[in-house]
Image (tube, rainbow, N blue to C red; front, side, top):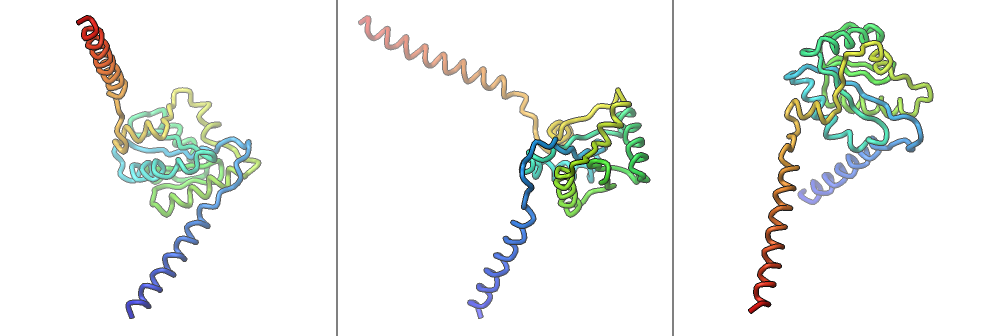
Length: 195
């Protein structure tokens, strides 16, 4: 009975691995412009944080195909106006944030990891679309005061990733210590040769 269970688990694992591999089949990288996934978010919104976390964990695998930009809308009234105009252009009734837009044909209110997979698939399809239109970019041109964030900037603000503010100073300190050690070693050699 134990052997049967082990064999069954092995077959199921192989089946899951094959399904997962099929999901990651990517289109050929071309000179097509990168698609942008826009996340309209609010600071402190748990669903927005989930969306940012998901994209932070997965966007690197797809960096040849798309990028993620965010607009914080609760504390920035210009971004909120942009959100409303984009939703109107998409024909959507807003139900809160996150509101996620890809091109001019995909939008979603809310976020789950299953929707995240759907969004990545939609972005990959838009990458292959010869008539790709970046609706948010077009609408944002008439909103001169709206301000987008990179995925990294949004993740730092939501404390999903920590900003390493001391890395520059750490490098200077390490170089200083190295110089002191090297200089001290050279001084010891020079001093020992004089005797």
